[in-house]
Length: 183
View 1: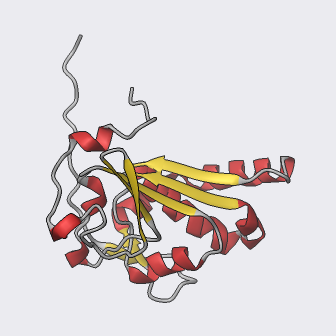
View 2: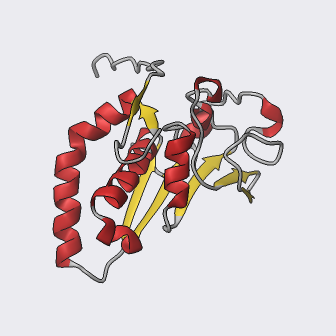
C-alpha cells in the first residue's frame, strides 16, 4: 500500500456571470469550471437518452461537489433545452452554496422538483460563506436526529441546519448521509 494523496481544500470564492441568459446570475467560478469541463459529454448523453426514452423523467443527482454540478446542470438544461423542463428534477446531498441570489431565484422559479438535503451538522452546505454573496436555492430537507425538518428559506434560521446562525464544523457528517455509500 503506497502513500495516499492528501485531499486539498479549495478556498476560492470568486463568482462569474452564468448563465448569460439570466440577468445578474453569478456562480462559483471553480464549480463552473468543473461543470464546463464535463458539460458537452453530459449534454450529449442526456439529449440522446431523452430522445430514446421520451416517457422517462430526468433526475439530476449529486453529493457535495456533485450536488453543485447538478444545480448547474439543472439550470443549464432548463435554459438551453426548455422542452425538457417538464421531465427534470434534482436531488442534492450535502451540496455547497453554488451562486448568488439571482442564481438561486432562477432555480427556484423553475417549475421542477428540487430537493436539497442536509444531514445533521454537515459543514459543506455552509460553504462558501453567505457573507461572500452565496445563497442556497430552494427548500432544505434537514435530517436531524432521524427526523426531517423542511426549511423554506434560503437564509439560515434556528429551524434549519444553520440552527442559531453558528457555523457547523462536523466534517464526518458530510460522509454519513443515510443511504449513501462511499468507496
